[in-house]
Amino acid sequence: MNQDTICALATAQGVGAIGVIRVSGPQTIDVVQKIFKGKNLHQQPSHTIHFGTIRDDQNLIVDEVLISLFKAPTSYTREDTIEISCHGSDYIIQKILKLLLKNGARLANPGEFTQRAFLNGQLDLAQAEAVADLIASDSEASHQTAINQIRGGFSKQIAQLRESLIHFASLIELELDFGEEDVEFADRDDLRQLIHRIQSVLVPLIDSFEMGNVIKNGVPTVIVGKPNAGKSTLLNRLLNEEKAIVSDIAGTTRDVIEDELFIEGIRFRLIDTAGLRKTNDTIEAIGVERTLQQMEKASMIIYLFDASEISLKEIEEQIQSFNAPYVLVGNKQDKLSVNQKQEFEKAYPAIIWISASENQNIESLQKTLVQKVKTKEIKAGDTVVTNLRHYQHLLQTSESLNHVLEGLSNSITGDFLAQDIRFALHHLGEITGQITTDDLLANIFSKFCIGK
Image: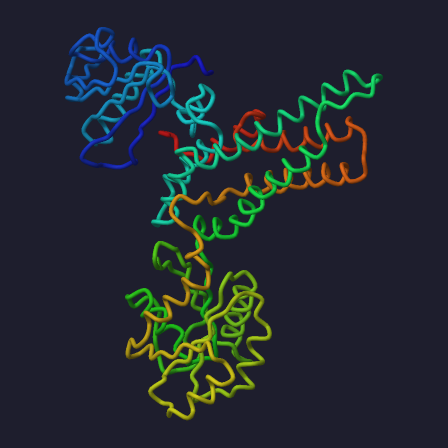
């Protein structure tokens, strides 16, 4: 299949000003030249753009187009590649695709252009996966993390770790060939020091996954509290729109309401919930149950309370049930005296006072949310692990290296050391694609859009 010439729409589906159709493969120039009226593309240099027309079988003009020509190996896929920029009519796009298919191309599978870039050595597997992350990025943080991985920051670190480990693996393997002579080519102290150095790199990468998951998937943040505490009003203030119905009637919110908020490049998935209380109302009771379910899944909880309607004891009882980081937010601060505020602050110094209805101190709450997810610990250019597959292989690499250290402490034979080192090398190779299976590649690239 890698010898096929493939084509697909690279821009989004639907009517637009232009559409871009991508063609790649060994017969790309032949296929396009059959339907293109303009310069002879075979005679043109790479990285040039040519104006002309696309013609059908009756030599009728389908559209005026621009042909962007990229000749192997200096293209995204390292194959001959052409991008046809046409007008964004669905009819025109489908007509051109049909002509390409009729003249020797086939439709690309999801992610097949990027898969070919990987198979042809343009990208390693970690970089290829970062392409999908870049396309899906919806915040400054997720965009920067994906860019860093595409440019090879993460891959270089993994390659350096693997290269240093391969050197010792080869020396230990050499010892096995001379097993009867009891020789030692790999200095055990040097090997121990190397593994400690590798672990000093692996541990921060593994620890970064928690933040990477936040950057990639956002922070599920549940707003909870008693009925009429002002949860829906707070949601509306944070989103700056009237997303939730606001009423003085307790129990108005009976279902989960979700939306997204970006603060300093971090995506918070805000979830407004039914008020926490015992109720005989069947529908409201279902809403309360859903609130409890959302709290179980939350990465952060905003506990909102009306300080004029709640006691310190009630707050204590509520927060004891939280299994995620939480922010205590006192609403309707205008109802309290200075002494009353001080009483709450004495018990809970981290309370944030707001007035949701008056839009007071909402920015302070937003800053606290950002601080809670520790975004300040990530600096520009830092390598952050955002991919669960990478995280799992890093953990398995670290575990294998720990086995090597245990073996060194117990003076085990070289064949057992070699086995654990092989496991570590295998898992590092799985990250960058030096070790792959067809099932793995199919699973990764099937999640891409077809034009990529």
